[in-house]
Length: 285
Image (cartoon, rainbow, N blue to C red; front, top):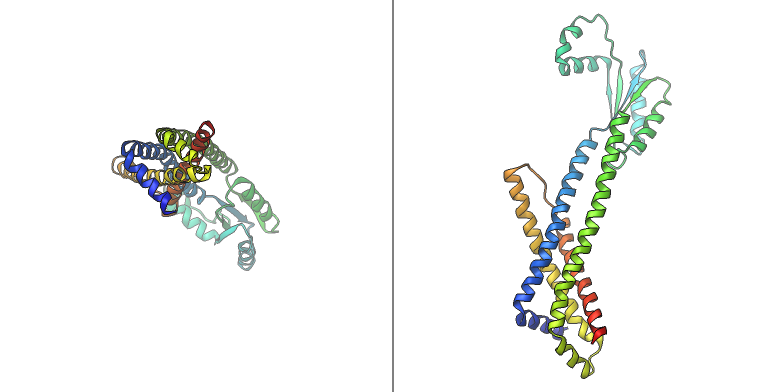
């Protein structure tokens, strides 16, 4: 192992310009991937914020006893999809309407009787806020004998589902394309280092070195270059994130785990590209 690290160190010393070029190339390739990742992260947060507004309102028939509504709230709260249930009395609904619909304040002030029904407002847990789960919960709510109507904005939730599907599809396609481009770029830079040491590899072959022994320093070198490129990419992404925050809009950055995944991704890409390049060259020697 010490010999392998020594070979990697010597490789960096012998070809500092090429090593620097490899790391910079990897960094910019992963920087582009990271930029897309930042867009995906902020889109996901925006969608999560919109999803929090998903709500099912179960309107109760007039004359429903408060005790029945409270019992129904407890039953609904036990649903695996449900996060919270709020009981809104008819009087509370009228007060809310008066405060939110200021333009109709005079109309509400002239009312002799309260036209608004009591209701139960149901919010679902994350992961259950798609159209299918919302519709299933709404259908279950109609089974209560004192349910008058159930509303949940079917068309709005359908649009949210489509937006979520489109975002996921674009993320998968673009992410895969950039990953493939990164492998090609990294593989090219590593192959340049392999070709430069072609005579050394040939001599090692002549003295009986196995392919595994020859391959290990290059694999470690590729992994180190990938890791350094990943770290540089995270730094560049952070600089871009700060620039956007100062000049355009407030955005969120990667979590520590997500930033670590970029470095790990760079390490694996460097390892993979090195393995492919060395394997191809060894076949030709």
